[in-house]
Amino acid sequence: MATYIVVHELPAEGSQEELLEMGGILANSCGGGVRWLRSWIVPQEDCLLSEWEAEEEGTMRLLLSAAPLLPVKGIYEVTAVEPAWFRDEPQGLARPVRIA
Image 1 (cartoon, rainbow, N blue to C red):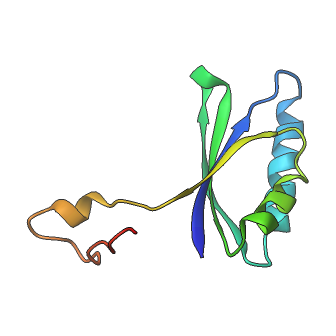
Image 2 (cartoon, rainbow, N blue to C red):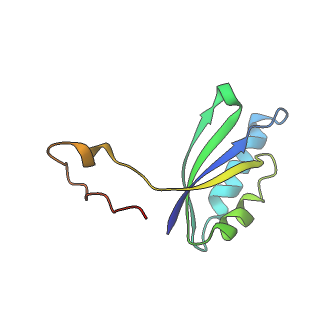
C-alpha cells in the first residue's frame, strides 16, 4: 500500500459543524484499500494536510470527492523517513529500504 499526503484547501465559508460532518463522511467511507491515518491544520496557509494509505490513488481520489467542502489542492505519494534510522542505537525500527 502506498502512503500519500493530500493538501486540502480550507473553505472560506462553512461552519465548524459542516467540516466535522465532512470528516465523519470521510472517516466512515474508508475501506476498499483506502485508510485515513491523520491530518494537520496549517492555519497560516488555510490548508489541511492529510495522510492516507491507499492501494490505488484513483480509489482515494474518488473517496475524497465525497467531501466538497475540502477541495484537494494536491496529492503526493510519499515515503516516510524515521529519525530512529539515524541514531547510533536504533530503537526497534527496521532500517530504511532503498528508494528507487
